[in-house]
Amino acid sequence: MSKPDELLVAVAALVESEQSNQMSLTVVTGGAVITGRLAPEGVWRQRVSEVLTDSDRLGEFSAVFATPGKEGPPTHLHFHVARILQGTVGIPETGGMYRVAIEDVSAWTVGDFSYSDR
Figure 1: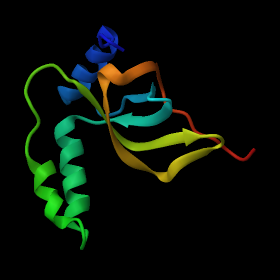
Figure 2: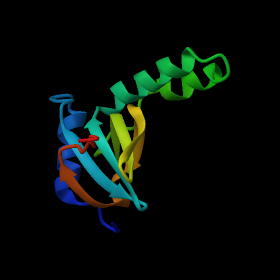
Figure 3: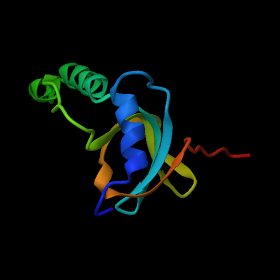
Figure 4: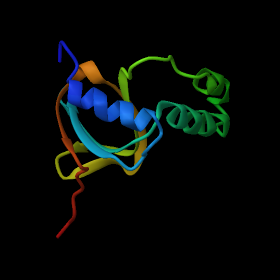
């Protein structure tokens, strides 16, 4: 989107105000479909930092994510427990941590999608 969707920005702002981390969202960005739950940026950064700290090879990158984000209106969506949908598979199965620029979202819907073998 050349101009971010005002409604999507409002949803992100509500999540950022830490009033809720239960908003499930599915977005299309760069041809990929990402589905999961939104988290406030600070919570997302902290979790990524923790994962990196526990890594023998990537621990040095932990501090980058431990710094606070910028003030102002949200510019990114921060997904946790999220999957990239491809065919009948969600990658990774257990969910991952994704950061998506709001201006790059071409379509979105409330709720997350999952597949079953039934």
